[in-house]
Figure 1 (cartoon, rainbow, N blue to C red):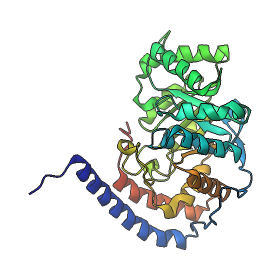
Figure 2 (cartoon, rainbow, N blue to C red; figure 1 turned 180 degrees about the vertical axis):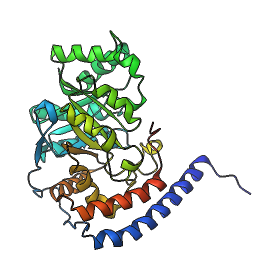
Figure 3 (cartoon, helix red, strand yellow; figure 1 turned 90 degrees about the vertical axis):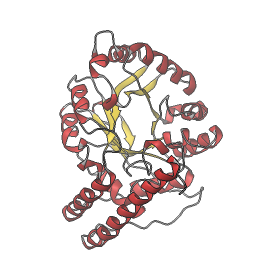
Length: 340
């Protein structure tokens, strides 16, 4: 008997998850259609088609008006695309009206590609980057590199990245990483401060209670709500502090999880539910918008159509999505790390 490689075994596990998820999606589609929660059809567009303006909302206590669709740059920055390909799609996103642009030092060549675009478009962008560390020294090295790669002297929002994986005691200690962030804000190197992440929601609550967090970006979709629960555990605290909130991993992230970030793969969520996923996240009280990564221009245009067609959910639709999300959560599991 031949031994299977780890990659083959991993693909088999993914196939089983896709089969289970597909079966659940098929069963749930009947209920969702019956509830009126229908996927919205959209006409494919070419690169020159005008998709229309993207609505804007106020990002919490920042007071800034940003588009309800934000561009995530990790998919392309960490993917097999060249810097030139990344820059082309990033430029198109901004030219089509997206103002909220999210990047990070750890996204391979994303910042470098975005820097090429910002040479002529900086005034059109609410620019967001991140530092993924617990310490002041590492945060300083990361942020200074980000400024060089982006070709800017300041950003609009600087996040403590992957807050659920941070040692919050070290982050908040006197003279620590968060003190460095506060100094950067005072110096005008960043206008606002934030936190991001996917797991351990209790750590986000602790950061929010400092009353120094202007905005956050966390995983909020109708499936992971039943695993991580940012909607119930964190979002109310953010609203109390008037902290802005952007939803990420709206489609559940890349199929198979973080281990496959450097591949071009579909999202975890079945395509038939992408429209309803956007409608769910945008309907959450206190959420300004959704940050979605893309692999190419067509995905970018699809996402614009999805947010422009994102009608509010009815109570019946919301209840149907809740039941379907509970079923899918069992198949997906805590793939972003521990919930507590």
